[in-house]
Image 1 (cartoon, rainbow, N blue to C red):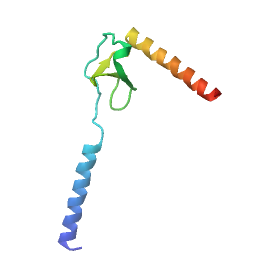
Image 2: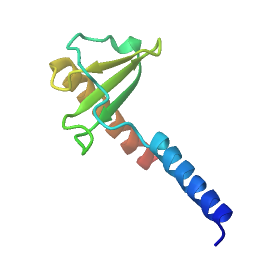
Image 3: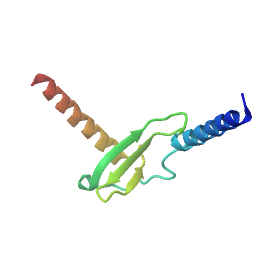
Image 4: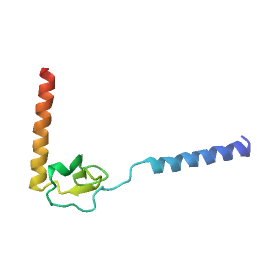
Length: 101
């Protein structure tokens, strides 16, 4: 191969490597700290749960408020466990009803 195609191939390979580094999710946990404060159900837009993984050694629960602000909550807090159990019951009932219909 002549030097120009080799150089072009090297530059393209380098660009692909840099692009893949920026596209991959950031390593580590999403939450630096959590709160035990109760969040009213009416203020919640979305609830996301992240189990223990190779990137983070703890379970994380992130509640997005209606204002769009994400809040990391303590997954061991009693109110969080109650909220998640109630949501599971509602979802189980919804799935059961949709199977019957």
